[in-house]
Length: 279
Length: 91
Image 1 (tube, rainbow over the protein chains, first blue to last red):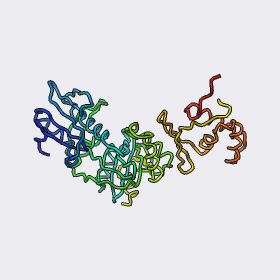
Image 2 (spheres, helix red, strand yellow; image 1 turned 90 degrees about the horizontal axis):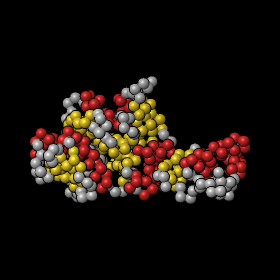
Image 3 (cartoon, each protein chain N blue to C red; image 1 turned 30 degrees about the vertical axis):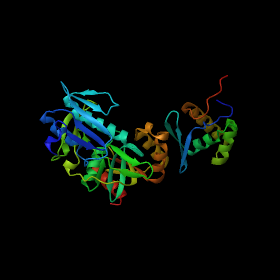
Image 4 (cartoon, rainbow over the protein chains, first blue to last red; image 1 turned 45 degrees about the vertical axis):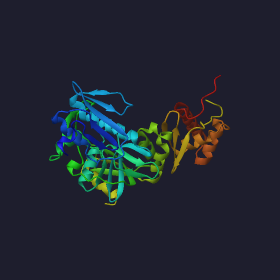
């Protein structure tokens, strides 16, 4: 990405959200918006995030509906990341949003819903390094009507474990995280991750990393009712949907096979997941 | 406990294989019920007392009536806690 990306009047658009720098920004922060370089510019943008230099730091303004928030320079990228995701998810209509990794393999979409720390991002990275296409590391977007898995290819948000093992990757960070830890951002395009297109959702796999598991990976089917409850718990923004998205999630649970994978060996987990996709 | 418990009419019920998931639009919670609990909830139509529900459950699942009574009592208590049946009328 050009380093001149963020300068006075510069505009970047991603996921239907326009990011605009409303004033001069120090050149050393030019890299920050690279984290949002996953998609070609959108043309139909209906919400703008304005990044305004302030003294000290920056202000982030989201459209006209949100209050201005001041951001310390060291927290700019995490704050922008949150602002863009929040805005993009708010713009999306007719979709169900699930806290999940998402990949496409062999023309089939696989959703990996889990709590934070379950290993979603690690699995997504390893699946993509094994030939799968990247759709998202943290937000699975499913068309409510048709069960299609839609790309939401934001920058991957990495913890120390992944940041250290991905030698040779182009990473931005570390940045202090709101949880008190550190995060790095990995723009997918800059790291040669193939970004997938919308695909039919073919499997739901609930991952769980267990360091002391006896076998490398254990996969088992999940009952439909159990899958529905788990999906419901991982839903994002359900309050915006009729019946909290219950009908759409019910359709997914009814029609899409669900499995749980517990694993201590990521390679074994990747192999089993790709087998589900027929790869 | 109501003498003839009644499941709330606004609950959204989805049958998935032999289980039932109930969505409560008021609390926005979803509850997974096993087949016995699901059958008990469906029998809470305001016309049966717990003894009659237990007899139906005993017949349906081929269990003795004593066990069915215990299951029904436990399920009704759980439904009351989760707010899935109409609250007891004030005395």
